[in-house]
Image (cartoon, rainbow, N blue to C red; front, side):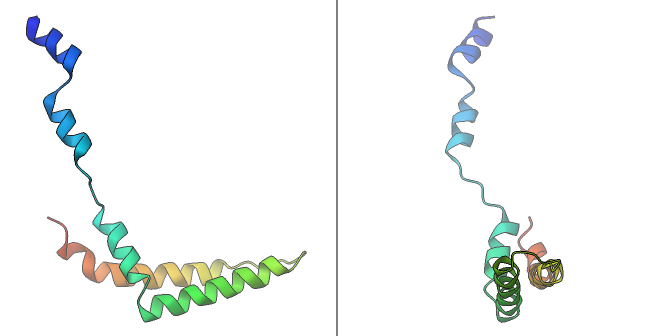
Length: 88
């Protein structure tokens, strides 16, 4: 009972170690790197141009869905070739 009380009062020492440790998701890191490749930059420019065009109109039915999915496809295609070499 004394040990349990001590654990409740002071906490688990391993919790402190986990709080100080920064965990990085390799998927997010790869996505950031892949967004800088030529193909992804081109797809992102098309998406931003579409968003600018649609945002400048007050009444339009146009959406940037196609450009958005093209960008995601380009980025995820790049990531898919690199991701599993980073997974332990």
